[in-house]
Length: 211
Image 1: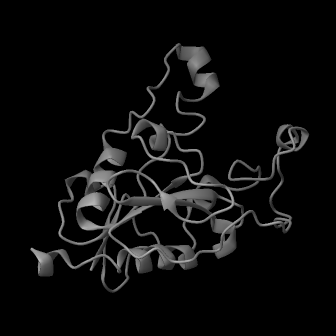
Image 2 (image 1 turned 180 degrees about the horizontal axis):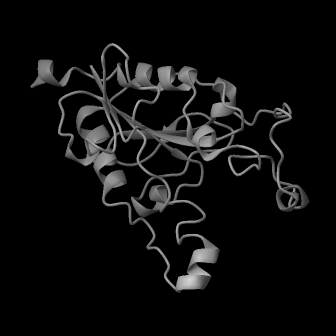
């Protein structure tokens, strides 16, 4: 059994044999084992827009706090270190620096993340069927470390993706911020990538057997 934490209600982790999905209603922060986990903790307070929308800030004068996710990432990190498994977060996540994790190389490959047996890497979900690059950082502990589809994919993205002029002027590639892609589609995990994450978690030791 694998516990899928911080996942979308009725999303790609629901209805799978051997997977126990924890959505917002169940509150994944309450998970306390014994199964290995695949965790997708909320990323809004860890990305480039962690302070909130500039328009909202201008109107209200209120800025969000960096890392103020209600303890979700901290819990996910604790769960992976305790029960084994893997965390998925966007490339550039400030959670890595906040929790003292080493940042993975852009070209890919697993590198040591910390002194607690964790490993980290960068991979693009586009290589697993996503409609945009969606570069992702992984943190894994107590698992095998498989070869993944590393690197920056040189192929052009689908015509439905229209990168902003600002990104083009800056010489940046289309990403999850590309125009024309609904938030739900941007945030979705491709089934092929979900299966990779589950396969990593399944290599963690059986905590019941070792208890």
